Length: 116
Image (cartoon, rainbow, N blue to C red; front, side, top):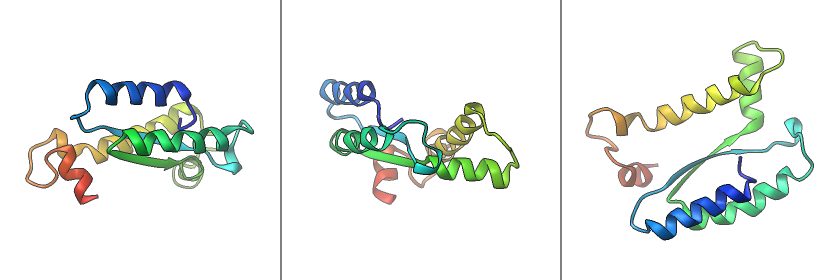
């Protein structure tokens, strides 16, 4: 999630070690409707600075939207983390399709970041 101090520390260390590499992150942003913890919004807010500072491209995924997709589209009454993680993996796969398959548009992360 976006609130992990360990995740932002890892991102900053990777940026120090490989400053010339493009870094893309995917973060699930908490929502008050589906929040388990009171401190989730604070953790997310504090981690945004690290993401902006150390990542070239950050994709934010709304936790409430994930639950809405599970309820309305997939017709799941109580979505489990497996279903939510599957939706996130589909988003990641869709965004990086152009990097894995041949084509002229967005053939690397730099072009993808510029065009987004």
